[in-house]
Length: 339
Ligand SMILES: *[C@@H]1O[C@H](CO)[C@@H](O)[C@H](O)[C@H]1NC(C)=O
Ligand SMILES: *[C@@H]1O[C@H](CO)[C@@H](O)[C@H](O)[C@H]1NC(C)=O
Image 1 (cartoon, rainbow, N blue to C red):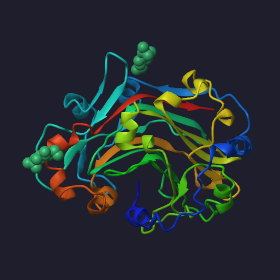
Image 2 (tube, rainbow, N blue to C red):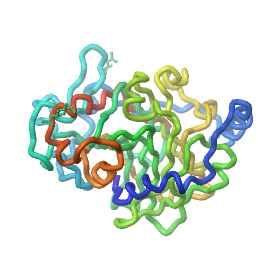
Image 3 (cartoon, rainbow, N blue to C red):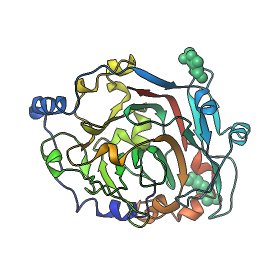
Image 4 (cartoon, protein in one colour):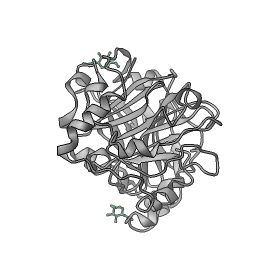
């Protein structure tokens, strides 16, 4: 989320692909064999399940100005509720976190939005979000991520993130200690993950905060494609001994053990992104993370990439027009943390 240079990263993505990997079906047996060695076979146990009102009661509503300079005014819990920007659907217990889609604001002004942070913090485990809708459209910048104190010294893990009309999800680690953290090139060429590497060095500073990103190849992993598939699930396995893995499963392809809340990731297909502990000191670089669900508008990344995104006019003009934000909402079935 601290992404001054993500614009640059996105622009360079086609020329900086490292070991772009296009696994064929014929190779899937090898992929599965390789994946099993990433994490030990284990059925994870649920530690925290957040659904329905839990997001409103057990998460904090961030009310500061957007650190990424977005055109948003983050709402307090009571204001978000009274303005209809945070509520629970009676029919299915899903939680809606929305951008204001009724008010006119001035061009370049601030539109009401919501950013929430889990009160609990974590040092590893399996983090899962099931959503049926994510915010979409030109100028939007939705994200689901985890972050530790004193950025970037305790690290950041961007599980779901992208801007404007981006076609697929971008997953990124940001490290901030003297301990190394890179995407080992060999892991990609060995077929341990299906995504495309955008940058290999995770080390981030205020002025160089691109991190080590991996781009999903499945258009159902982000934006209109995600929503059109009925949404789906993202899972981060944060394992200090093997590394970080991120999966996306479209609605129709969610593993049965995950739906049953008894997941064993070692039985799943290759993740979209994998950051091996062999090339990244996981425990030194990532600790005490809170989860964040956010939607900002324009700002460093969505605004910076706007003109190259195929979006009409300017980002500043876009924010003024309420009708652009009718679909700018998260609809979340649950977030779960397993250990
Ligand atoms: C809805 O969510 C609440 C937590 O806010 C939970 O206690 C309840 O069991 C859920 N209901 C259903 C039907 O899942
Ligand atoms: C607002 O946005 C809608 C949808 O993008 C567009 O049709 C309409 O012309 C815009 N209105 C103004 C005043 O820009």
